[in-house]
Image (cartoon, rainbow, N blue to C red; front, side, top):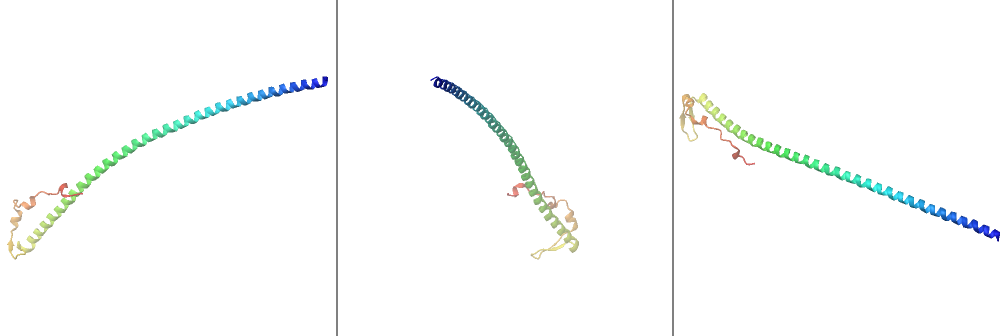
Length: 157
């Protein structure tokens, strides 16, 4: 029986060692689990911080782009106003040029009439008019002193 009790004591020691090793293994697993949980928490915290930084960067970029957009819109509005002013002025100048060209043509026609026909002019109705050179030099001749009438009101855009 001595041998059986010797075997049983080895078996008991073996069970104690096994249960001790299971307990150590269990503690080791718990420690690894806690370590992994802590690492996951830290990783999640870093991830939240990166997301927050990214969100802050995007918010800052939106603010900057809105500011740039407002500046561009203001610049477009100013440029458009300058363009409209220049276009109105060009229209006035074109009308004045047309009026001056018509006056010049009329004056050239009168000069041609004076130079070629010695002041005798026949109208469509058959009337013959005679004008002397002096009558064209008279400062009271009001056609030459009329102001140019072109204004922005004449043109509809």
